[in-house]
Length: 361
Ligand SMILES: NC(=O)c1ccc[n+]([C@@H]2O[C@H](COP(=O)([O-])OP(=O)(O)OC[C@H]3O[C@@H](n4cnc5c(N)ncnc54)[C@H](OP(=O)(O)O)[C@@H]3O)[C@@H](O)[C@H]2O)c1
Image (tube, rainbow, N blue to C red; front, side, top):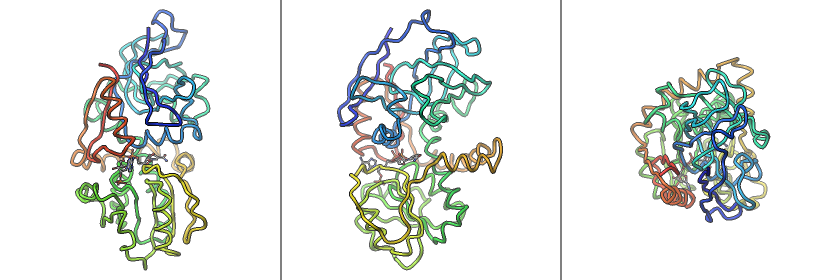
């Protein structure tokens, strides 16, 4: 039996191909192992960032591929088609981190009522969140259209939630407004929604082609295109959350605001501009935001279920906005997956679209 896998060259993400890999027959599965059919998965710029950071953050280790190639992790749904674990039934649906493939073999561990973990040796070096699968068979919030929104947005909105929380607990570092680059990205507009909900002024920075969409979202107080950054008044303190990861843009903003740049945190790399040495910049020193640190801190302070409960409330406030501004586009089959992947890589996906894919025909 084989799985069809979509793999990319690690040093040239534009090079991609399909391969067939051998997977065990149901009867030959080792004890506690599950064979999962990958039903559907979301693909956004975030997955491209996983690939860009594949070596550094060990994303390539999660789903092994032939030498020089990698299988990009995606968030989505799978169906158990064979099980050698007594606590997991054939037909169950799982939500979690999958390869761009038709099948995945999982070594089920820590099986509880709500979740299980892939205990495979090669996955042990990444954060536990990437090895966890939620058991969602009878959960309506993970079914149909709602399920698609979860796969597309949930991992991104968790980051929006954590950054908002980090800024709020630091009184926004004294800033009177927050600037977000790649304002049209899902992670950015989730954060803009949260900031605006607690009365912060939010300024969205985006490309000219996406300015109309960003305006239509209604969660930014002001929108400025990348070619007009210096038109922003520079006499009030600001905080900057960077989804674009474009060093020239970051340097221009820091020089424009000088000491009034009170906080500069890096979250994403949508522009994939090569990091040039920007030297010492005026204002707060840019630093990466590391989500697991904030999770650990809040898990300790808020106690069991504290993050989930607050995140759930935030998600409920965000969901109506998604219905209004995001259309889910579903595509199936290897050619469609390749086309949407290359469009995502090149930044050609209209921001109002959320793509759900499947390699199954
Ligand atoms: N650190 C974390 O834990 C974490 C968690 C979640 C997300 N993130 C990061 O946040 C960023 C946004 O992710 P997302 O999935 O929300 O993105 P998305 O919705 O797919 O964002 C699409 C937008 O990104 C910009 N973009 C994408 N590809 C581009 C390209 N090739 N060239 C130029 N611009 C491009 C464009 O925005 P503009 O025209 O507005 O620039 C585009 O409208 C990613 O880098 C992601 O990794 C980080």
